[in-house]
Amino acid sequence: MSESKLTPRHVAIIMDGNGRWAQLRGRERYYGHMQGVEPVRAAVRAAIRRGVRYLTLYAFSTENWQRSPDEVETLMGLLRQYLKSDLQELQKNNVRIRFIGERDMLAPDITAAMAKLEADTAGNDGLTLCVALSYGSRQEIVSAVKKAAALVKKGDLQAEDIDAKMFSEMLYTQAMPDPDLVIRTSGEQRVSNYLLWQIAYSELFFTKTLWPDFNKDELTAIINDFKTRERRYGKN
Ligand code: IPE
Ligand code: IPE
Ligand code: MG
Image (cartoon, rainbow, N blue to C red; front, side, top):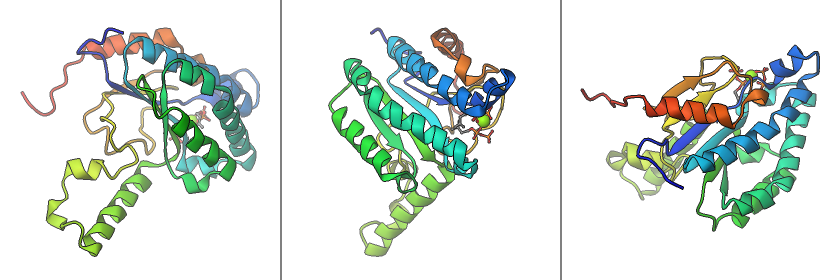
């Protein structure tokens, strides 16, 4: 696939608005979550077609554990299904999958399925699909600080040798480039504890579209908008 210099290498999406999409139709929130699965597949396919190398999707935040047990169970059920049903398509599309987040909060059958998917797709060198699951950026940063502190305590690292590059490698997103573009659906204009360190210089795009209505054409339009932006990184 042709990959222009201006194509975002890494796109990160905050998939928001499932509940409101359902409520607008007089349905329960779970219905919106169900309808939010197909746009995930569409986004993966469109990202591949557009030459994006990394796609990071915010599927469940650490704060989302505070939702009702019913809703959490619905989301975990959909996740279980996705992990089972989509392996073949991911393989066919040469997608490498990885997960970021607090795994110990997830059910053992889910973490086992995640580990298997990561292992089964480890040899693929197409799109990297990174799913943020039970993910919280502050928690990620704190755990990186703890890793660094433990190394210093052991004498394996000098405090003065810690720099931004090394710190990045201690985050869950280790070995991934920072997002070039962050998209949030549903009209909210906030980052909700997503990739706080990594988005220091990302371009942001907010769309009013509710996640279940998101599709490949909108992703393409947003990528085209991204291509017109001038990134300055503080320089003149
Ligand atoms: C996004 O939709 C999915 C998750 C956060 C898991 P929401 O469930 O947040 O939907 P709204 O924002 O309430 O409409
Ligand atoms: C952010 O959406 C988390 C995900 C999309 C998984 P939320 O709906 O949880 O965020 P807030 O509560 O509106 O900030
Ligand atoms: Mg929401």
